[in-house]
Figure 1: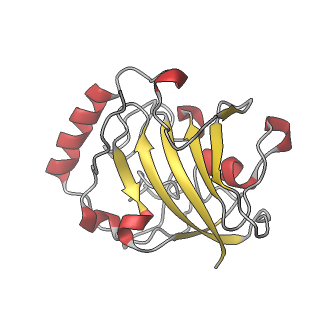
Figure 2: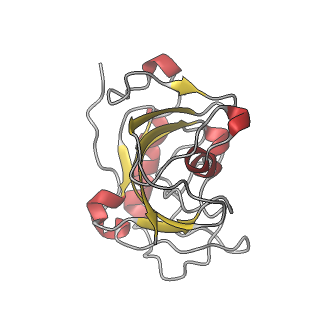
Figure 3: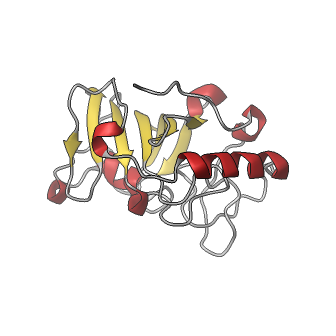
Length: 200
């Protein structure tokens, strides 16, 4: 039975716009896909420590056991394709526009969920503003770069502008053994519903 999705992140904290990152600063908003390993986003709001600790403890228990592919709830997908790198995906809407080139500045709306319990940890739709970033240059987690740009060797086609794709991203292409910010537990498989709006 699918778990009901619940929003875990306080709405105020979600209303900061991520910016490009450098590798020598600690990540201020690590639950977002744009936050790879570290950031220079000094304007990001600080997360309430008490709430973060409570959420981290709760999510740590919920995600103690990684979900199997069969247990992941993606009712919007009639069929999932599994790539060689472990990403699973389906296109819920075929785009009709151009495919983005590596390094292009694009805009995406997205919703991120934990595969372990279907809990929503971030949503650009809730903020009312898409995420802008350069694709393919490690400004986002690896699963996003390859999931949007595509990879013929992994049998992942590129997205087209106007398209919508659901990505199930294994931990090694997301936040790995470390997790992120007390919101995403270690070794978490993540589900992202991504809408490619096109260039900025």
